Amino acid sequence: MSDPRSHAALIDRLGTGLVPVRRLPPPALRALGWLLVVAAIAVALSMHYGLAGMLQRWAAAPDLKWAGLGAVITAITAAWAAFALGVPGRPAAWAWLPLPGMLLWIGASGFGCLRRWIAPGTEVAGMHQSIDCLVFIVSFSIPLSALMIVLLRRACPLRPVLTAVMIGLASAAASASLLEICHAYDAAATDLLTHAVAVALVVAVNAAMGGRLLSRA
Image (tube, rainbow, N blue to C red; front, side, top):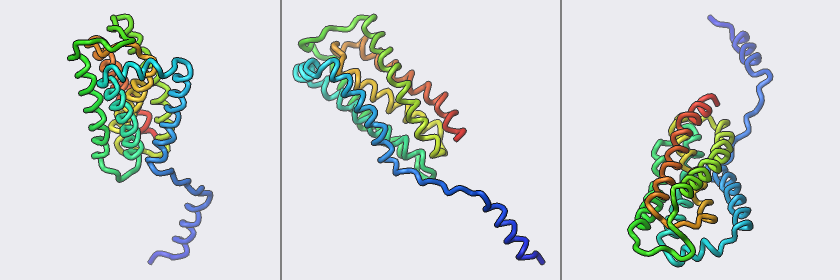
């Protein structure tokens, strides 16, 4: 028969030096913190470039406005989904949360290619300008993705790759939203294709690298 005193001593030894774990804030609150950083960048860009040009383009071509709104919704919902997937026990169905925003973003962007007029204050982007857009989205997505990975490492997500995909989607959508502030080009096929490549690149890199980083948490 085992000695109860030895069990108590073992429990005491295992419990010695344990530090209480600080509970993480709810996923929505942590997503809000990340989005506040994006909002701060948007304010800085608005102060530098102004909003008159963007509002003029939106008034002349509503599809540009709806595409921008879809990108914002995608960024918000993908960020929320990423932090929700970081909580053990949350279902993988959270990954479907950004779908409505993505459909609006893609649909409105595609409709812009069908227009026969060019929005005032814009021009059709050439290859050089489209590459600049790609560089913008990727450059802003890198720090935004890194910040979210840092915020999620303590959460220890059980689906690191899926969570990293949501991180990449949120960061790319947020960067595309920021680009609207200083993007003086119409929705031409070349420009939209470059945007799609930039978003796909950010998501793919996050899935490859972010998944590994999150799995170590």
